[in-house]
Image (cartoon, rainbow, N blue to C red):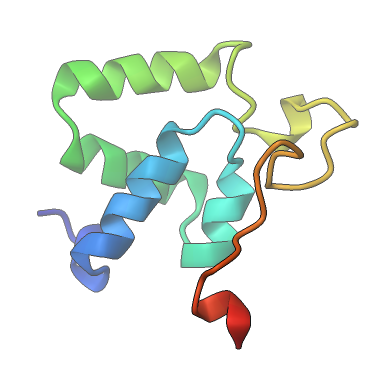
Amino acid sequence: MTIETKQFTERELDRIIEMAWEDRTPFEAILFQFGLQEKEVIKVMRGNLKESSFKRWRKRVNSGVSQKHLKKRSSDITRFKSSRQRAISGNKISKR
């Protein structure tokens, strides 16, 4: 376990890794939710993935396919959530 992961629960760490894998989730969203800069996300990913998985992820993030960097993203995309994503309904939290 790396130093960065000690401050997160297993569930939070799983969510950080999941968000990092998602092409449409920018690093700024991870910073907003968990306070991790891009370089810290890279350290978390390096410490928690197999070497081959980490290399594949880095290659994808740095390619034109991923939209992890807001500066490389189309100006038409103005939010973190996809327009096709369904709203949460029937969720206890959303009822508060």
